Image 1 (cartoon, rainbow, N blue to C red):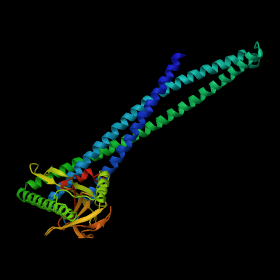
Image 2 (cartoon, rainbow, N blue to C red):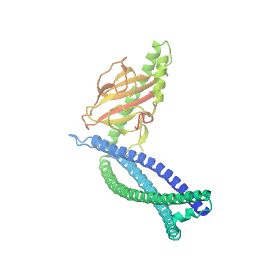
Image 3 (tube, helix red, strand yellow):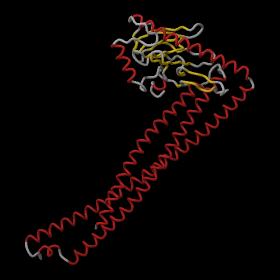
Image 4 (cartoon, one colour):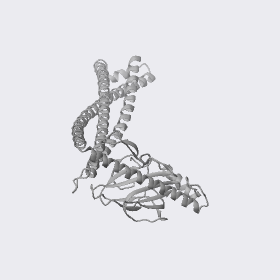
Length: 407
């Protein structure tokens, strides 16, 4: 009896911990599925925004950057899908073990129930229930016998219900197992397609690189021109920020050229901005990050290093830049022979939106999150619509990828 009780305790503990593990894995599976869906959507956006057919094909440099972006996202998608498949494997193994335990538990319950039925039949044939009660020595003993008969009948009923419950649990687990195996097959098939697409993209990139090598002088000149343009824009943005600080502080009677003198209201805006780190909206309604923040190797000549002091977002033609947070327009920049930029002050934080063809705000305007700032310029050369987005705290550059949600 003690051994049976101990067995049931062990079974209950195993079931409890199995449920806890399954619950944790289900949460992880949902998170991975959400990430996989986001990556799939990003690949669609890359194909739509960077590889859509245009009247002009654009530069080979742009094609290389687009391919590299798509390859990186595709590799991440394959990694996440593998994680999902491995997690499903673990869930399947847990279910297999749970099914094995349930079958053993069900077997024991059926054996106990069969023994109860056998004893009940023997008692029915050997002793009449009424005679069993009447043969009691006294009234108290008769009551006890009646209670025993009721408890015995209830025990039989409980055993029957337990068998039915375990049978249903077993059926549900078997059903879940079939579903999980189908889901795993779908993931494996998808991963196979993703790998085939990845290999094709890598071959295309190699072919493109070969054609570039045949025109090396032309493309190295294009790279250098692109680097000079980027450095020029960055210098102009830096000057714009410093100038905005000087003008703002002059009004407040301060002389600092490196940090804003903040009023209590401006401190509140800055604190709210800081509290939203990682949750700020995108500076465009939709698009893809075509170039991230920081130093990166050139796709054609890895020995050449580029630096991006902001992030570059490619979006649809006709798209508009929008404010990421409430603030005040403190500067407007017009690059000679180039595009325009708008800088918005959020306390002592500044967001800057470059490559605008038309502005809808002016210096001194108060803006709020999602307010339209201007039209984003579409290049006549390659047909791409790109916004360069910068983020500063006073004169210190910040990485926008750490501040904008899922950038």
